[in-house]
Amino acid sequence: MTIPLTSDSRREAQFGSVDSRPRGLAASVSPLRVPAMLLTFCLLALLQLWAFGTGRFDWLFPQRDYIFAPYTGQHSIAIRTYIVSFYIAFACFGSGSAVARLLFAFDLVLRFLLICCLLDLLNTIFLSLFGDPYALAVVQIIAGLIGFGLFSLMLLERGSMPEKADMEIGEHENLRPVLRLAATAVIAAALSGFVGYSDFAVVKGLRDITLLGGIGPGVLLFLPLLFFQLYLISMIERRLDAEDDFRSPVSIIVPAFNERYIIAETIRHIDAAARHYGETVELIILDNGSTDETEAVARQAIAEATALQGRIIHVAKSGKAHALNRGIAEASHPITIRIDADTLIAPDNITLAVQNFSDAEIGVVGGIPMPPGGAMFDRARLVEVLVKHGYYSPALSALWGLVGVPGMFAVYRTEPLKSVGEFASGMNGEDTDMSLRIGEMGYRAIVDHRVRYVSEVPTSFAHLREQRLRWFRSVYHVSSRCQDIITSSSMTIRGKLVLPYMLLNSARRAMMVPILLFGIFQFFTDTDPTSPLVWQAIAAVLIGAPMLVAVAAILINGKPAALLALPEYILFRAMRAWFTLESVLTIPINRKAKSFRQPSLSTQSDTSS
Image (cartoon, rainbow, N blue to C red; front, side, top):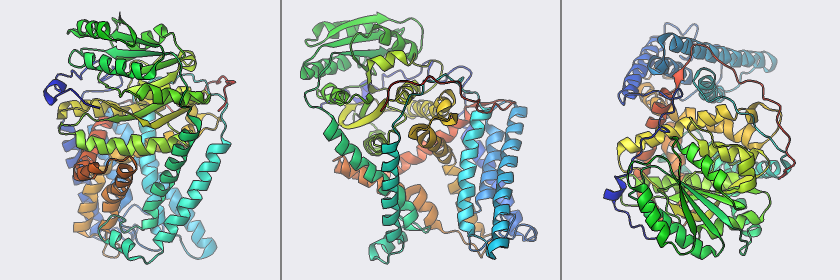
């Protein structure tokens, strides 16, 4: 698709809005706060590493970490010291009152060390029963995962979060996704184990250059092999289930706020897609209080359209969710498509996406948001898109486990869209929240890899920062609002596996820069000569394994030229980790913790998948 936009025109995008920082749920944070926090973290970490390195505490902590029982083997990094240092530094610079942050730090550190004591107690019992403790490396990995998960849980408990929403949790067919997960996990484990214990020269070479690291190639290969199988299943499933000749009238809703620079192109691309589709297409532009010429430009573009019926509706109340809700109320056809005003769809997008609705199980369909190209972040964003939306999202679709379909281009079955309730306002992640709730009704949410459209990529650091702070906060906002699927007795892959993993991964990403700094400190201070840091392990986790997945995603999606952008992608991932840390620092901390409440009585839907 030819993109008529230049970098200069893209710079006209006005990215700040009421959705950038929802009132009461996000505080303003200076760009200097992360450096200050990292400096504090470094001082805390170095102080503890020095104290352990003197040997004065060897009588209590012989492994020179907060480890309370004897173990066999070595560990690559003093993970417990790192976790404690991060917790305290985060509390020093988080948002909220000093008292609230002090209580937050005390609660975090106390809970973490108590859990570590429990792990070590279990090891002592194991030692007394079998005469040999289990490996230190194993328990340190467990402690690290617990540290990540506890951080996200405490943010949900003590952070300012959206109120829990009553959710309609319908009947789900769990047998197919569970069998798929079990079968693919067994195959992935067998293959990764075979590689891990093999003496192949190529494996040794990859380990030496850190792509498979020093912690065992089998560990790092398991998830890529698992997702590759799920991706293949998703491709086969879409080919078998989507009917090429399926059509249905569609309503398209486009929320717009100061989009003069692009709205005409957006409408022209929708009109071209409507001609390709050949069925009734209703276009509703929702002008959300624009102060530029958005309305006049949009009206002229609609008048020039040949294949759609369009109109403009004014929505005075600020916020994209309010505009979307008005659009849903106005939509009159069985399929409703949400398109952002800065998204340019391809001529075949509507046709390909709607084909999936021939399957009665499908409730939401998304695609792959390709960058326009030409600006400084576009090449790295392309790799990110191919990995996340072109690889992981289709794979999760095969498990009924896809949580969010991006709002840039999302296709809904109108009946559940109207019945599930409105788009949530005053929070980040309203698009994820909507697709998740439709999925929990019993429908499936999928990404069709064939549907590729062009969507906004920031052209400045300020815009990228604003976008990523919103996106990374949304994981916590959606988890808080939709906590019923985590805590209820209803079993869904999405609620019991994927969403908790997303919370764990969000914490891991926020803690990525600190762990890299900590690893460097421990490597050079060498506090425990019997347990040297294996630098390949850290490099493999932070760079090596993600690069292997990125290469696979690039080749699978037929974009080999994107391989040249891998160095930029490494730097982009570092920026992404930085913004994730900054994002969690914007969450206001409260003095009192609120545990996840027991789920309200959910209506059991007759819809099954």
